[in-house]
Amino acid sequence: MNVAGIRPMRRLFAVCALLGLMACTQAPTPVGVSDPLEASNRRMFQTNLALDRALVGPASDAYGEGIPDGVRRSVSSFSQNAGLPGIVVNKILQGQLEDAAHNAVRFLFNSTVGLVGLFDVATDIGLEERDTDFGETLHRWGFSEGRYVVLPFFGPSTERDAMGIAVDFVINPLSYVVETPESRVFPVAKVVSKVGDRYDYGATVEAVLYEGEDPYATARLFYLDSRRYELGGEVADDELYDLYEESYE
Image (cartoon, one colour):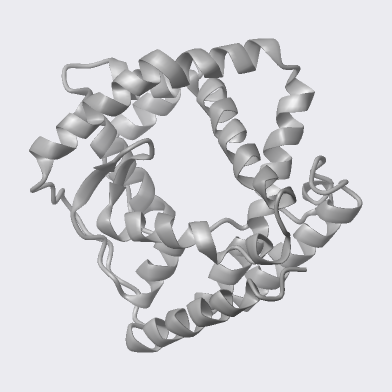
């Protein structure tokens, strides 16, 4: 156990607790689009498209077609299990202690009976993952979503969720208690799992990124409506459902 690494984690929790006390009212779900950075966002969107065409898309096809489905599921399960301690922390910061305990028990089952998470045995006994992230934590603390932004590699986001992504990188306790080189397995598994997701949801990705008159606006709509729905808002646009239906045709 890397005891020295726990100290920064304690400082991070202290800052998060202070922020939680300062902003404890859940932010209202916004409507419309705030995209004053559209020109630079569109340039980044095109850069990400070029990366997807040249690298991510071909790599996902090679991975999906060359690796057996069972192996891919195990990699995805391992990656999800490794991320659970961070989800538990976020649930605690959101005050959702029952969900935190639920996810902790899930992590325990999959880390033991499921062989360090290679097999998802917890779902079969009713311990499904109750997902969240630090972006949702900020939402529950009262922070507004801010402007729409397109991030390198990560793609569509908002200022609040971009901050959440950064914090989620360091909030997982596993990164402080598992020493290197073993701890390097976690980010590698997550990247490989994302490549697998690109293959599994390829039809939806293709519909959003490459079809239609304005893929940028479509991706923006898809992200904002999906994210707001995740955070408890209502989705009024039928276009979202059309995209989902296209992925299963």
